[in-house]
Image (cartoon, rainbow over all chains, first blue to last red; front, side):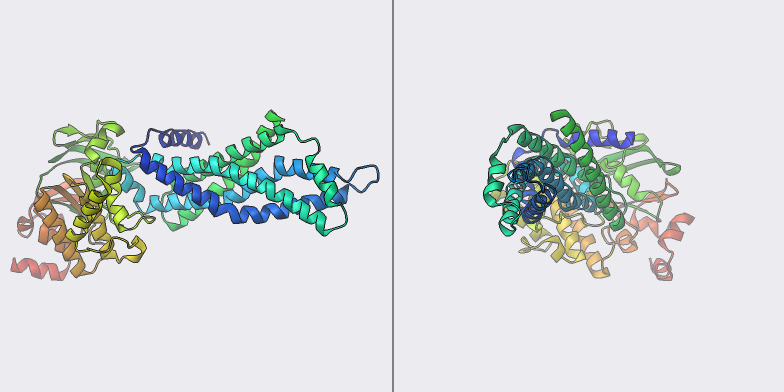
Length: 243
Length: 250
């Protein structure tokens, strides 16, 4: 455990050393941003709409009382979507999509000697391979979470429109009622750290792959599992600290 | 010239290199041969800095490479070209981008100059016009040739080649050997080739080092190899009846 933690920290230190040529690294960052951001937009959109709709329906189902205003359904959906559903569930899904791709891509480069080739050329391999992915993760995952929040709330609206439980007017009234900026801040902080966790842990697993195709698969699996555990742990810590 | 002085390397309990001394001269095809597990690839990786020797030094033209820090090594690495056993082309890049990759990072050449250089390297390995193909679209022999083109794009002083003929048919193997030999002569590179292909040994072995049990067991040229009395070397080189028959004619 301590061995892996130490090696992980040393790898990240190497990854953020001064690049050999900024322009080449910048191009890689842009490429990774497109891969992480645009590449994940579809799956994030789909899960967000459904999560928002389900959260609204289930909240409405549990608040069956004449003493509770219907608008509260919108407020609960908004807060739970912004604080928990969008950052955490989106990140767990992205750990599977982006994380496994990073671990298997770097792992394959390791077992096919492509990383050795970079090192022979005098390229700082962790810097060239890992830092663009981490930068893309910490910038694009918060943006994806913003998209997820918007679509989640839209999903809730669609659920209201499709059923008679809560009117859309009550839902919108609930959404706009008593909004605190802190919940958005917490959400963005979570997204930033989750982006870092997914990209760095999966890159670490890929970078230290040894063997062949079987081990590449194992690295991808380990990367996703460890990322998911660390996301949930970080979720707890950030919520405890910031709320 | 590259000098290897008293290199030792272990992996856990496995004592792979047991004090290797050798010199690899410029403009010569220096071959490291030996059976599987004899330590030839480990020696090559120690020379290029992918493995850190437990003891000993690797000296590039008087500069102690082993004692250098990563940043200091970059200056020497700019002059190193290497062809890997698996070619190690970057899958995400096409042939041209693979070749100009080191130029992008370490030179101030304009885009047009880099493309000219890539075209020159591709012509040199008889792959002119294949710039836009991706590694997945190339045959094994073509990948090796693109690997060589990438290695020579930086005009290397030192060229390292790991098992250049593995997985290739005999005709392509001969082409690759000839290409490496021509590059060594034309660019006066210090070329170190790890191989267990006997055609390469007899064809281009200007200077051969035979490793056995982690030690340098024999050293000489391809002309001397047929007349040596070294039992282990003879068992290795002339293992097949064909090679035994060929030896009698030499």
